[in-house]
Length: 235
Image (cartoon, rainbow, N blue to C red; front, side, top):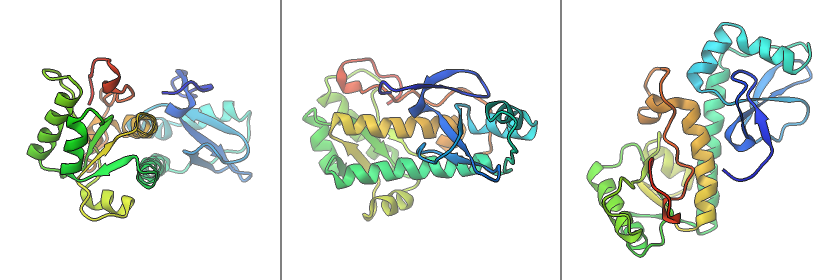
């Protein structure tokens, strides 16, 4: 994550950079709504828990209590589908980020182009649609390890929790199965958006978007650029 103001999760009380948390905004009528881009006017509160943890907090009234303290007794109405709304906004934000990087010329699409960049050491982040063929993903990962002088490590691409159809629509291209970031700062921006999204939905839903909610370990940490010389644990 980049250096930025820190915020405290109203549920866990954990502190972290605002890019890693989700802002909840309060309307004049007391309706609570997700503000993933943190641009809505008025008062806000921050959460950094997973989707499953949030649903539990909503069901038990813990979120409403925490919001009442954060908003100092204001009238509050928490929608039952708040977790789903947050997930949808985080997905949209991450895919929009990829679209912006594509327009800026920082995103490669197509296995051959990505493999060439990977072998020449120009790749900073490798992404796959959820329905990408494992052998194709493995081939690109091997090219990335060779180009990054990381042979023998677990450096590999990230499988996104969306299909090629969704990815293609988001990028305005046909049959987008693999994508690669060739600019270090662009890769950092995409990592930030993906990390927040994947942390929220949890590892089970990240692996299979149809999976039921389940408490479990956090999603893989993808915040570090493995081409920058640090050990890879999640890509």
